[in-house]
Image 1 (spheres, one colour):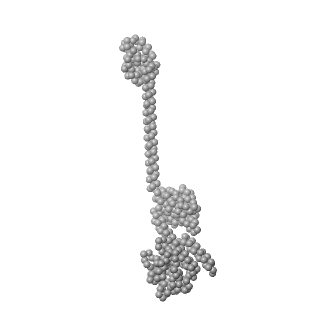
Image 2: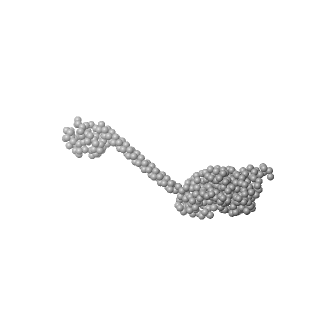
Length: 407
C-alpha cells in the first residue's frame, strides 16, 4: 500500500472518530473504537488506553485489546509495573508521542497482556486542565513506527481526550439538568420529546416514559401556546441560534409562569441535532409584577379621580365666582337704576311698612309712594311689594341702601 493510500486511510479513520466523538453515548465508546482503529491500521497487537487515577500515582485500564482479545477494563496498573508509561506521562506534552523499547523480562506489562511486546509508541491523552491518561500501542516487531504512524497515534489520542472531556461535560450538564428544580426537555427534529427531567414530570404529572417519542401536541400540553412553541423550536433547528420565550403552564402545581431558553445542540457536521428547552419558574416574579402593575393602576386611577375632583372643585369655585360676579353686577345694575328715594321706599317696604306709613315717614303723599313703587317693581322684576321686598333682601339692596342719604 502506498504512503498516500495509508495517509488517506488515516484521515478517513480520524474523520470517523471525530464524528463519533459528537454522537457516542459516552467516551468509552470512542476509546474502544480508537483501540480497534489502531490495531487495524497500524497492525499493533496490543493497544491500551490508560486513565490516570485522580489523586493517585497508578493507572486504570479504561479500554484495551491484546491481539484478538479485549482486555478487562478497570485493571489497576501500578507505576512500577509500567515504567515506560510513567516516564512518558512525566515527559510528554499533550501533542507528543514517544517510542517505547520494551524488555519483557525486566519491565513486564500487566497480567492481561499474554504476548510480550518488543516495541511500541505511547501518547498522552489530553484532559481539560491536565493529562487524562495515556494511549500505548505495542507490537512484536522491533521495527519502530514511521513518523506518519506516530502522528496518527497522536491524533487518535487527541480524539480520545476530546471524547472523554465531552463525555464528562455532557454528564455534568445532564446531572445539572436532571437535578434542576425547573422543568427541562430535549426536542428532536420532529419536535418529539427525547428527554425530560424530574421537574418536568412533577410539573406536568406526565411520566417520563410517556414523554419520550411524543410531541407536546400529542400530549395535549400548552394547547393555546402550542403554535408559538413549535415555531420557536423549528427556528432554533434552522438557525442554530438560541431563542427565549415565556409560557404559562396549567399543571398539578397550579398555573405556573416560565421563562424558557431554547438552546441548540450540535451533532455531526455542526448541524443542530436537538434543542434543549431550559425553563426558569418566574411565577413569583410574574405575580409580583402583576401586583405592582395593579397597584400602579390603582394609583393612576386614584390620581385621575383626585384630578377630576380638583378640576370639579376649581370649576365649581370658578362658577361660584362667576355667579358672585354676576350677582354683584346685577346688584350694581339694579342700584344704578334706583334713585335714592326709590331705595329708601324699598327699604321701608322690606321693613314691612305700609304706603301711608312710608308716606308719613318721608313726608310724601300715599299716591306718590304708590307711584314710586310702580316704577320700582319693573326694575326688580317683581309683581307686588312682597316680591319686591324679597328681591331687595336677596340682592342686599336694603342693607346697601341703608347708609345712603335721602334726597
